[in-house]
Image (tube, rainbow, N blue to C red):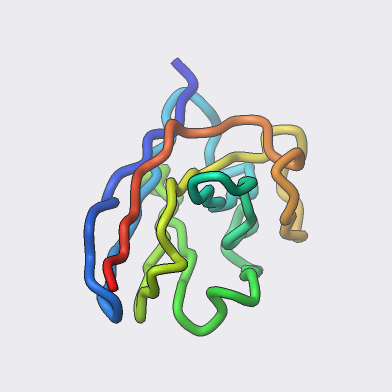
Length: 128
C-alpha cells in the first residue's frame, strides 16, 4: 500500500521544539522530492518546506526560515521536519507530501498541486 504516515505532532509552549516524521511505504521514496505543508483552522493549506530527492536542495517559507529544518533519510524512507522557536501562529495540521510525477529533480516545489501523494496529517498546537 502506497502511503505517507506523519507522526510527532503535539502540544508545545511558545519557544518550544518538535520533530515531525513522515514515513513512506509502497513507493520508491528515494526518487522523489518531498514537501511539508500546514493548514490552520479556517485557512488554506500553505507551504512550509521542501527537499529534493537527494537532499541536495532545500527551500523554506519565509515564515519558518531559520527556525525549521527539513531533512530526509533515504535508507529509512523518512522525511523529517525539525521545528524550533515555535510560535502560536505555527499551530495547524502538518502534512507531508510526495511529488511522484517527477523523479531525480534538483528543484524544490512550493505549490500543493505540485505534489500528488499526501499523508493524513499530524496536529501541532503551540500555546501562548
